Image 1 (cartoon, one colour):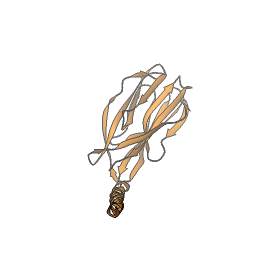
Image 2 (cartoon, one colour):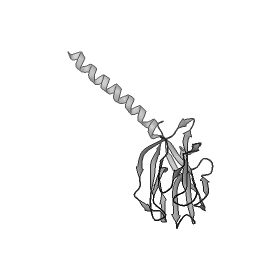
Image 3 (cartoon, rainbow, N blue to C red):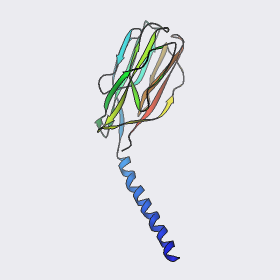
Length: 186
């Protein structure tokens, strides 16, 4: 009976030791979302894509479809190294005045293509992120509150990127953004 009682603490100690050794490796990865560029384009008829190896982290728009939209792009650094952005394809077109888009799991938005007014079509371009040949994760997606489309600026907070957008109505309608945290399971 004594040997049995002594064996339990040894097993528990070994498990705790293994868990402790795994933690420093995960803690060693640092992620930084660094704002790099912005570009202003006409809202109606514009196809916008972030520059290579950059992702969308913000958007602003003032006025109707005849006015410009500004897109804000950032690069992702993992342990100080640039993550690679592997662009996929454009989403199916949907009518802007009742549109809602969410990128596939673990993908970020890197572009938008809109034609016409609120009855025109909108499409989104998504991409996956890779660092050292392994995919970067996008976790804890959340939606913002509503913004008036014709008078707003939105930028993701630190460590977050744009993974979706929804809009209803015309330029006085409401726009929301979905954002997620960039993470890496090392």
